[in-house]
Length: 204
Image (cartoon, rainbow, N blue to C red; front, top):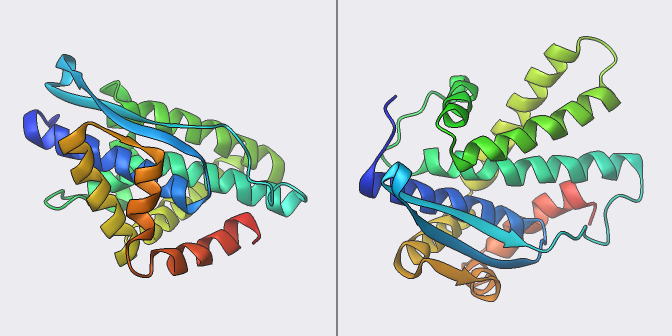
C-alpha cells in the first residue's frame, strides 16, 4: 500500500481527527478544539484533538468500571485510524488491519502515536486480566476492540457526525469544542445511540 499524498492525505487526516473527536464526545470527554496543520513531510496535513485530561465522575469506582474505562480510552485512540479507513474509497482488509497500523508506525504518522498508546493500555489489561496465554489474550482483545470501534463508528448518526466534522475541519482547519458538541447533538438519534455505549463503558 503506497503512502497517500495531496488531497487524499488531507481528507484521510480530517476523517482521522474527526473519528477521535466524535469518540471523545461519545465518552463525555471535554474537547477544547480539533485542528489540522500543514505538514510538508506528507504533502498534506497533520492534526490533533486537544482535550482536558479528566476522568468522568461516574467511572473507576470498581474494578469492572476501571477495565471499561481503559477500554473506552483504547476505543478513542483507535477511532482515528478506523475512521480514516472507513472513509469512502478506502479498500481495507479488516482482518489484517494490524498490518496497516504497523505501516502507519513505520510512516511515523500520528496514528503510529495513537497505537503506541493502545498497545501500552492493552498491556495493562493483559497483565491485570490474563491468566493464561498473554500473547493470545493481547491479540484477541485487540481484535475485539477494533471490531467494537468499527461497529460504533458505523452507526449512521455517529458516522454522519464524523463526516460533518471532517468536512468542517477541511474548510476551517480548526473547530472549537463547543462547535464539535453542537454538531454532534444536532444530528438525529446521535444522543440515543451514544447513550447505549455510555451505559456499557461508563456505567451510566
